[in-house]
Image (tube, rainbow, N blue to C red; front, side, top):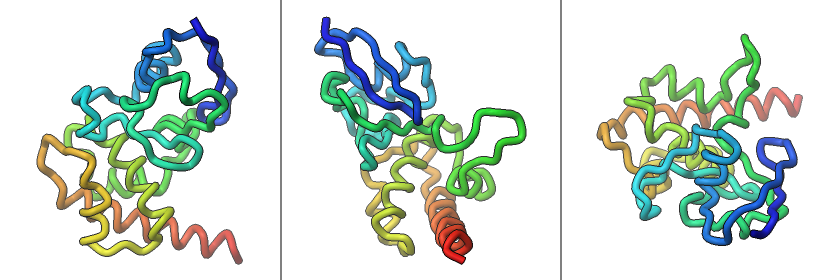
Length: 165
């Protein structure tokens, strides 16, 4: 079995994998990062979205060996892990606007939203809905998710302005 090595949430990790191992399975079962969900096994639902080298990808459509040397960011890497650590501004916006629903799709929605906002820092409602098309919320709560993404984008713009000053 091939050995793979990558950086996940800022830490270098490695492990032996079968060549057919999907990245989502490596993250969940080998590394124990269970925020990345397996929702449909067909790459249609978006519950498995992570960032690979800064771009949102559906980790159920990526073989782990393809991630050799990659920078991976999962939902667990967005905020600190200690008590009192603040949520990422996009996570906080989802919490405040009840964009969480049952929570199953939330990690993929947040990761997709961050990718969208990186490309379009001030998306309107139509752009957000287009950007989330590859993600399915089985609670059908898109209204609050869209509100959360708009608020998260606003907070990130404000944080960018504050950092620039």
